[in-house]
Amino acid sequence: MIVSPRTQHRRNRVHRGFLASEVGATGISINRVVGAVPAPEIERLASQLERIALRTNDIVFDPSDPVRCVFFPEGAVIPLQATMEDGRCAEISLTGAEGFLGVAGFLGAQTYGHTAVVEIGGSCLRMDLEAFKAACKNGGALQARSLSYLRYLIAQTSQTVACNRLHRVSQRLARRLLMMQDRVRKNEFPMTHEFLSYALGTPRSEVSFAAEALRRLRMIDYARGKVAIVNRQELASFSCECYAIIHREFESLS
Image (cartoon, rainbow, N blue to C red; front, side, top):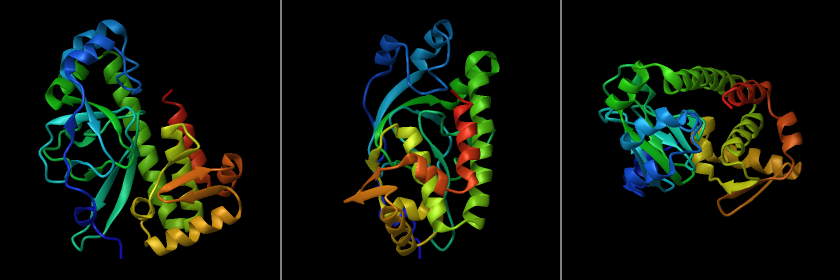
């Protein structure tokens, strides 16, 4: 049984890391949505942005929380999870510096609808939802980059649904590890079987079996909550076609 993050993850809420004025001082972000906005436009938005620090297992928002902010990860990587009435949950999307969270509010919803739990800690920009929507109504780079990310998010979510239904656990694990590496841009990164069980919609025992199979093939290595990609090319070849499809859309955001 896959246990709900409500019982497993710390109930820490996001905490302030840097003040909004410091965002204005730098005038730049590695987030691909905000960071792609030209200087004159970002200067108008700087006072609306607040950089916060996120830690692994922090809950950014719950399904019933009113949508008040959107979040632009920088170093942080945050899965979005759907939780069932019986407590089981599964990952529906993964967001890093390529995009933003709070899409439901951007599209008119009153609540977030899903749970966002930090998997990789790091910095993140936070912006009031109404300020974000008002800025997008003016057109320009922020609106264009936001819509491009929405297109990618639809592609990622729909392909992941098909993948988790049709492909072997080991192939799905290879896809998810490669997706995480694309976001952290490192060969070694934190990873637990708990997060992977949510991501793949399968019990931890099956994740362990699949991970051991990939290690025996010398594609990955892992120990004490960390995984290392040993042979990315072989891992990508072993993965199903879903990774190539998702990665192609991911690269189009550059």
